[in-house]
Image 1 (cartoon, rainbow, N blue to C red):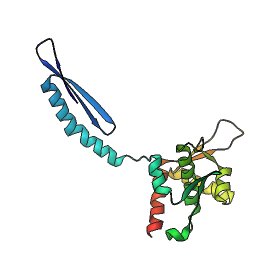
Image 2 (tube, rainbow, N blue to C red; image 1 turned 180 degrees about the horizontal axis):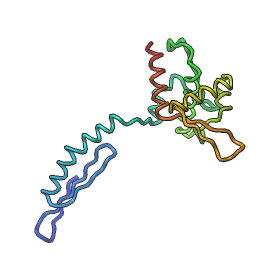
Image 3 (tube, rainbow, N blue to C red; image 1 turned 120 degrees about the vertical axis):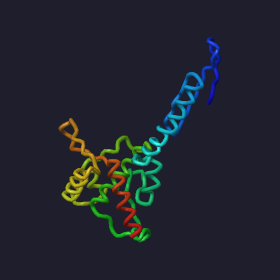
Image 4 (cartoon, rainbow, N blue to C red; image 1 turned 135 degrees about the horizontal axis):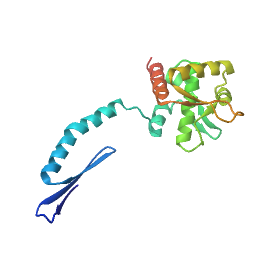
Length: 183
């Protein structure tokens, strides 16, 4: 957008607005100053924005659904992992992958507004995975140590810790499942 605004000092004031993705900048002033600013922005900042996009890791709910829709279903009973092993040519998931996939299902359900929180207690994870409680506890500990899951100890003494998948956990799980489907 370019606006020429006459100035009382018989010079022209120029306003330029540039939007690149989510970044919006505006330059105001003399034509020479604005032109220099625009060129500097385009040559220095736009490549930096593109580089930042290359190293940014973030998942929108639509992207999560695309990545995990073959494994996760949102049912009236809540988010569930439903696998057709033969359909994907996959062997059984490891306990760690199963736990992480259930936490991703909880995140998707929360992002869709189907549940109020994506945090899950150990007992909830054990119930939906049907794994031995000690196995779930051990796998969660491994996932927390690797940075794939966040553990949140609540202030209320009656409640146990809750667990949430992290962005790096989603990335790890996606790469593990991609290897299984390809392999």
